[in-house]
Structure formats: C-alpha cells, structure tokens
Image 1: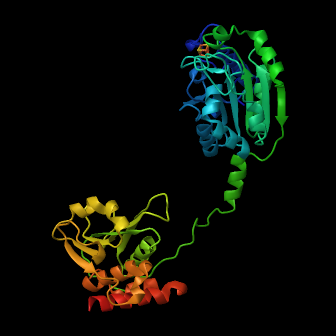
Image 2 (image 1 turned 60 degrees about the vertical axis):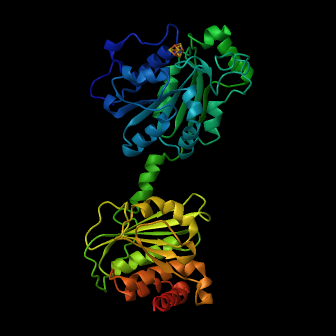
Image 3 (image 1 turned 135 degrees about the vertical axis):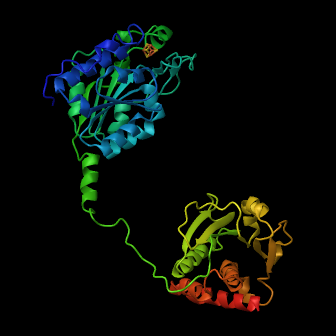
Length: 442
Ligand code: SF4
C-alpha cells in the first residue's frame, strides 16, 4: 500500500498507446492499470516484466519498475526477480507467441508455484513479426504462416498450467468489464497466477480471418473453453518455501571442509603446466586428482581442468594440471612443460598443445604411439614390455605419473604413494603400479 492514493500507474506523458487502432493490447493495459489502482500497490514494489512482441511495448507506459527481455523468457526473469526480492509484486505481460516459445518456463513456474502473475495477451498470432500462427491459433485460422488454415489444435494455456498445479488460473476477454477485478485477484494470489485474455489483433488476425468480437466469443464456446476464475487452490509459495528451507542451513557450510595438511616438501620453484592425454574409462581424471592431492600434501598450489566428450565412456579424456609454489591465477595451459600421451584417443585433443611445445618440454609417450611429431624431448613408456600385470590399461596413468616424479623434483614419490592409498579398495593396485614404474625406470 502507498501513503498517498495513486490515481494512475501509467505515465500520462507517453499516452496514447502506440498499439494499432482497435488492438486489444491497449484495453488490457488500461485494465491492468485499473487493477493496480484498485490494489494501491507501492509502484516501487511492482515490477512489470515483458518479452518480445507487441505486448512487450506495454511496460514502458507504467510508472512501476520494468524489465524487458528475450522472447518467451519473461517468466524466467520474473522468477529471478521474485526470488531475489520476495517483497516485489512481479507481473509478466506476454503474448501467445511468448507462451509457445517459453512454454517450458510457464509449466515450471506453475509447478513450483513461484509468486508471479502472468497476463497473456492472447490474439492467436505473432503480431509484431507479421501475423504468423502461434500455439493458440484456432484450427482453420488463416495466418501468414498457415495460408491454408491452421491444422494444429489450439493450446489451452489455462489448462496447461492448471494441470501443472498453478494455484490461480483465469480466462476472459479484453472486452470483459470486470477484468480489473480478475487481474487484482490474480495479483493478490501469493503463488503462481495466470490470466489468459483473448483479444483482437486488428492488423493481422482480424483482417486475415474477417474476425471480430462475436467470433472471438463463439470460438471460446466452440472450443469448450470456460471463462472466469478456473482454478484457485492456494499452496506454499516457492520463494517463501525456499527461504524457509535454506534458513535451516543458516550458518552451516555448504560442504564440509576437508583440509589437507602439508607433510612433504617440494623443490618446485616455478609454475609447471602438465597435460595428461588419455582415453575414457582409463582413470585419467581420477589419477590426475590423486596427483594434485599429492602436490597439496607437498605444500604446492594446484589446479585441475578435465576435458572429455559428452559421451563420457568413449573418446578422449584429458586432464590439465598446474603445480605452483605460488597461488594460481589463470588455469589454462597453452604451452605445457610436460605432456603425458597415453592413449591414441587423447592425441587429437592435445595436438595444438603438443605443437606449441619446444625443446624445453618433455613428452612421456606410450611407445606404441611413437613416432609423434614434436620438438619436445620424448621419453618412451613401454608399458607392456616386461610385466603382464601392466596390461591393465587403467593403471598406465599412475605408472606414467610415478615415472614423472622419479625423473623430476616436483614433489616426493612418497606423497604420491600416500595420495593413491587413500581408498582401500584401490590402494594395493595403485601402489603396485608405482612399483612397476620403479622397475620401468631402472
Ligand atoms: S500488430 Fe496486432 S498485436 Fe501488434 S499492435 Fe498491431 S494489432 Fe496489436
């Protein structure tokens, strides 16, 4: 409520409306203003949210807050606004075009019962872009994209959100005198409300179909679409329910901390970028993670980035690991100091990094993949040479990482042994892989 009576929520300086003569949009905008006057809401606590379409022109006429976004997405913006500030009355103005494009958002807003009011300017076509058909075009309706008549069934917007538990739905026409009361009731509902308002697009749907008010009313009858308040079943509003549920977690950390105490020393004096190129299912990412843990045990900073295709069980698997004695800012690796090339699937994914490496770099490569084209020094890894156990390909990455530690001073091998022993079910085989690396390098 306001301290002073608000006589109008429209900016008189911008009137008359820019809509085509006879367009229902002007009538609905006027009636929404009348509803707001009736409710006397503080204009600072009202947000009109619109998306693309002629109805999206309406927000600028209001002296409330406004947000104009992408086509069909107004309900998502409204959801975010309401979640961020539950005190706001959030009112979405969208056309039937936006309902079709953003149908998914409508359904989910209804399901979660977010406290926004959606007012649908339903004139059965896309007015702004030339009168194409929409999800509400009546069957047989002539539009620029259905010149032989609409074949698809008309979507019942109210029923669509109602079956998804909208707490308030109503349908009427722009000609209905009691429209301000209906809009006021929808706005006052604490949960998700939708009002489907049938109206005329005088530029396209009316001339294309010789359509008029009485045909609009008879269309409702023919379709069996009822009017009035169709559903009003109050239930917990989402923003409120969400705040109550997270309040129980107040003061608690989102995830328990598991600090790692450094017990080893590293002689690494500069940042070192390493790439491990392998294949899906060969424990590349998990081994890299253990390697990083060992680095932290050795008082280093680490970062790890994994890359694999959406088909997580086929194709490449690559880990980029940075070790540094100082805090790491940028976590990308353009030119690695070390590259572990273990499986052929990984090669295309690291080709550009391999090409960037120079004589200072080292490539530990599965000998079966040699020769490779690189300026870096290549150290072959003969996994299958001397031990049938080494045919277990999922341990090749541990073997290669252990071999790297034996050849460098990044951090002690004991730190890696401790890291790979963390989970009892894998510890024996991990340690066995490290023993194999010792024999490989001997
Ligand atoms: S094109 Fe149709 S919906 Fe758009 S302003 Fe004109 S009459 Fe209204």
